Image (cartoon, rainbow, N blue to C red; front, side, top):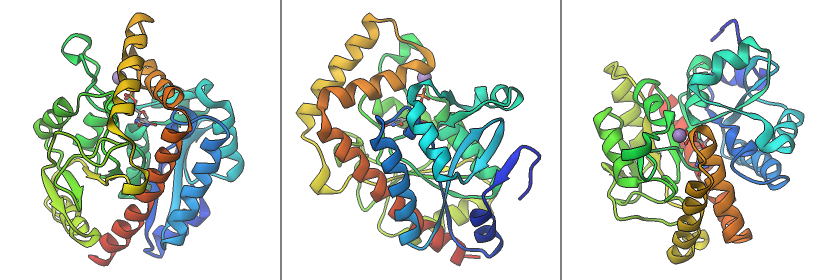
Length: 306
Ligand code: PSU
Ligand code: MN
């Protein structure tokens, strides 16, 4: 697919033309989701994992005002090294960064938009944004949820971090017609843990079954995407008490420091990572790799449906 502002990496373009599976990957997870240099190493490892499972990775970002579906290793290094000083780009920010010819890292929402422009239907990440705790007062609801309501991409994630209100996030998604699929689980995973107090809408046991739902949804012209919630592998799950304590402390610090708007999620992610030390980072990396594997299988099975 062509678009005046979009550059599709030749490997990605070739895969799309030859009807081979492609998996989109986001870049805010690189700049704002993990510390340097582990963020760069992880981004490259995730791309390698997608390739090892028979699909072509398309890491998405905005470089010098161009929307990119597929980055070079040098571009990934720059985003990772610049870290939280890179502009975090969601739907609202896209036209400004493009008009200014600037560089930005794309959130789940902006990555979905660019993936859909390029004709990519499957996207792997770590965690999605959602309804924040205390949203009754702050109105802080991630633009990721509205994007899922309108843009046709399946987002494979490990659920959502408990910095969010998982119950309200599910309510919001239900209102907007976004199904939440549990991969081989009836429970909504909470990122570092395999389950939470909440159930998913539809547990499905195979990539093929997920691909069939995507096909049915879009063949009926039902707009929007799907959440595929893939629990962190058992061996890398974290003790719930340790995560809960770090999340509580991070939330209190954010409140005291009056952190709001787009700064909120990066602040909380960084604090939870610091407070839990290397353990949570290792878990974070493993769950993204796990999501990349499932996304590659879903992309393959979706193409097979014609
Ligand atoms: N949750 C994570 N890791 C992340 C993010 C969320 O566990 O890296 C990033 C994603 O890019 C997501 C964004 O799209 O944060 C959501 O930001 P906000 O809540 O401001 O919409
Ligand atoms: Mn927000």
